[in-house]
Image 1 (tube, rainbow, N blue to C red):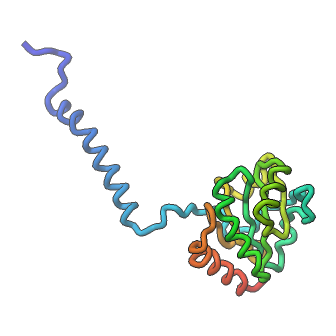
Image 2: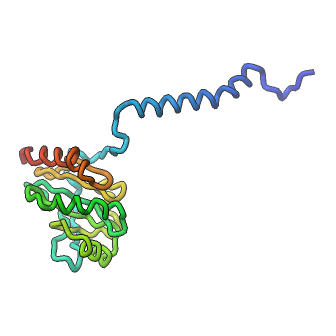
Image 3: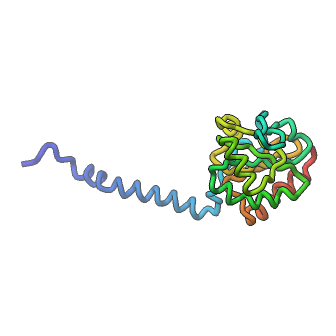
Length: 192
């Protein structure tokens, strides 16, 4: 006697093989991504080549610097660093930013992301202030306009006011030398 609820043999084989086929397909996809040579840590930005978002953030109170105003980008290469006092990687990259601040060919500006003003002031007071302008973004709305995934992130804005490069994560001496400085040099060499 045959059981009517039993699936036909070809169908049962397919059900048994289906998980294996799905696994092999996913493994092939992951392997192709791994072997592609593409930097998987690099997150592309849809804003590269577009004008920097219109931004006019108030200054950090208690620090004698202007806020972040995108109108000031025109005619000068600007690095916009997104940081917060509560961000451990921001503390890690800070010595690198202090070094970059010595280069007077560009402006180093900051977008202080979802931070308490007293914490941001203490952070900069404790480990130094590399910035020439600091805009406060308490709700994170400006960061959304900039396409920020998280902190820290650093943008190179060219003399034409367009975003030339975006670095996601903390800057290191190697990432500055190999990635950021070539982009800054390119932006400095470009016409207005």
